[in-house]
Length: 216
Image 1 (cartoon, rainbow, N blue to C red):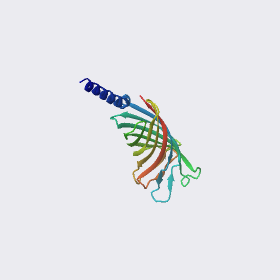
Image 2 (spheres, rainbow, N blue to C red):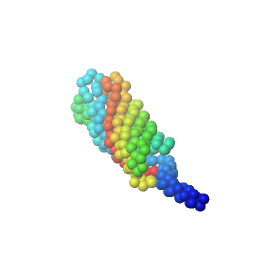
Image 3 (cartoon, rainbow, N blue to C red):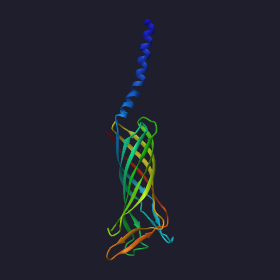
Image 4 (cartoon, rainbow, N blue to C red):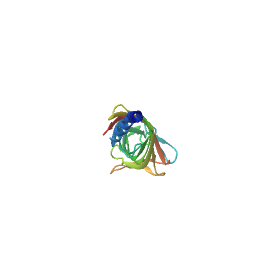
């Protein structure tokens, strides 16, 4: 009896010792509700096609920046709020002889979800979002344009400590533009024109990004 009791005690102690780190890791993971990830990125692609097929107006590739807020839903899923901004230019030389380009801010305001695959300190993830894309040209005489858009992305998240990590990701944004519509229009007392009458229905940009992850 004494031997059996000792054996049972030893087995229980060993099981607790094995389960301890896993249980602690789960408890630590569950202790966080939010993740905030400011990031820097480089964005390429995106063009408007003129209705008559005579010209394509491409957005210049450039740096971008943004921030992501993830809200924990379950152990492997999170809600995601995303804001991303790019300062770029669009070539309009074929329309305006006095200048080859128009300054343009491209912004995305998105909501969606993130799925994290199983892992310890390094976890692959997949993200899907929908929302609005906003095109804000300069000079101010040109009006702001907003469209429905969606994104899909994937990458890796590295947690260096319980509260601090690194997130690297590639993401594609697709903006749904109504065909045969006018974009980048200016209307003042002296100017009344639109830069482009669009033929295509989508505008796609690709973004590579890296940033820090703060858990709280």
